Length: 150
Image 1 (cartoon, rainbow, N blue to C red):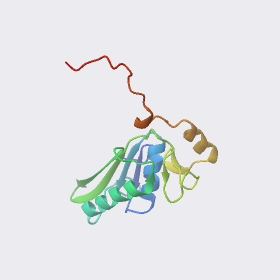
Image 2: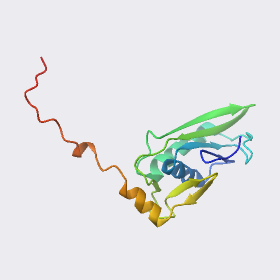
Image 3: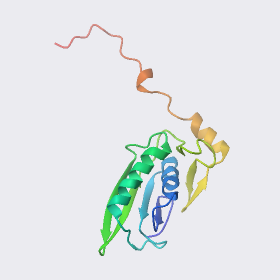
Image 4: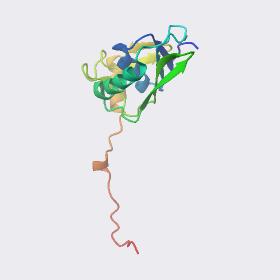
């Protein structure tokens, strides 16, 4: 296994986890493995189940807009060594950002090949201008009141 645009490896849980998730949300999705070395070999993770729960909480609380439903976190095992696998879908409400930095280059990341990189102001503006503006409160209901439920 090698790192690529849709895959990344981390040895341990760090603050970069949320940054990687934001980058995947802002591009075409991907998978982040924690407990693997740079070559993709499982080195293991202590207390993987507890760490996976902490990662879920961090992703839910530090990324805007909400990424609920766009990621899955699970614990895997290889040769008796546990690791965490985070599968991230491509988001539609781009740009996603780290809450503490907002929609700024420091808060908005993207994937470029196997690297995570800050977005430029122009990229952030372009993605923001393409965001879906419809919400349930703005969707018009049918006005035909002659239909009955017989």
